[in-house]
Length: 414
Image 1 (cartoon, rainbow, N blue to C red):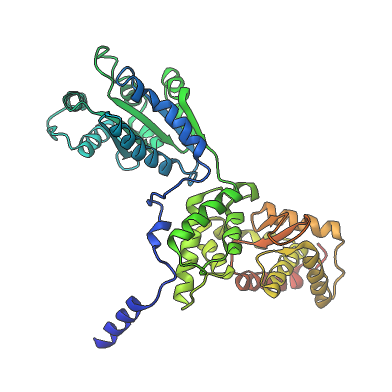
Image 2: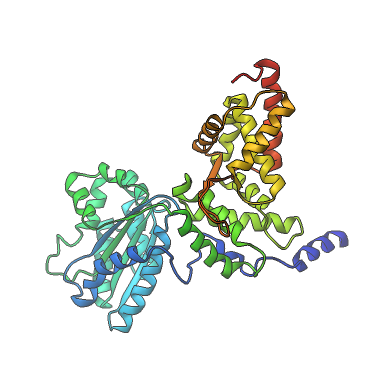
């Protein structure tokens, strides 16, 4: 028993490289939102009339963007700050955030709004229309204005249907003289889900559409740097590591542009480093984390057997060059030198420069490689490449196995 206690206490007392790990979690609200300033301005302009002419109309915004593009955190931060500003200006305002992945029906959504506003509405025996009428009367009595964000709105459309959406956005049609206190933000992964609505409703929602594009690598770098400063002790993660993650995930480098995935890679890489008893995050820790977070890493095992002999040899050359240099990226010239050396070891004629470049382009298209045309501290523009999906020793081992098979069964002609 004492041995178990010693193990637990030893782990509890171990120094961590994280000073505030939760600041890398998806639900954390950061102090700033890099590269979402324009979207915040658009939201502000949509809801600005709430402050200037409160209650004249019900304001609505449609937010659309892929996973990890900052939709939810932007909506939450806007709701938090806007309501505080409104209260300072004398307008009693609340923000309610409903996750429609959990609350998918109209009845569930309306009751969740009631619950978050802490309104004394009977929970049983009422229809959704009666609950809503109760709510409207109560917020009238409290002189309260509300912004309701319906996150994962795709699920609500799929389950509740077009009539339920119409009911929400036209809630004041039955009460034209009533003060318009309910306002909405609809948050969806794709605008295609709106095609399930009737044309009138779809057109109405598209009037105030805000698109959240996938993050590019330099944008992800700024996000990672800010979160790393808040969550990780100084010196535990280098700029090279942050840039590497940014390039692996950035939409302009072939990645999904998903900030949530980038932050998760950094978090898992730090946890791997800690398990190894280290106080700094290395590139290999990041590659291991990529293989856990990146869904394409699972597909890599299915892709590798279909590569030609020389494509596999090129991949091995890249992994070898990266391992020998210890750098996050290597120049294509260095790869060509290692490739020629490997061809000599296999006793085969190396392919010409243009053919080798074709292999590299194909590996990049398959998502195995990431590339950059400029690196910090390097003069001029050249092509630098790296492997993101797996630790170098793992990928070299897999490639070696496949090369043996291809030598035996196919020779090395292709």
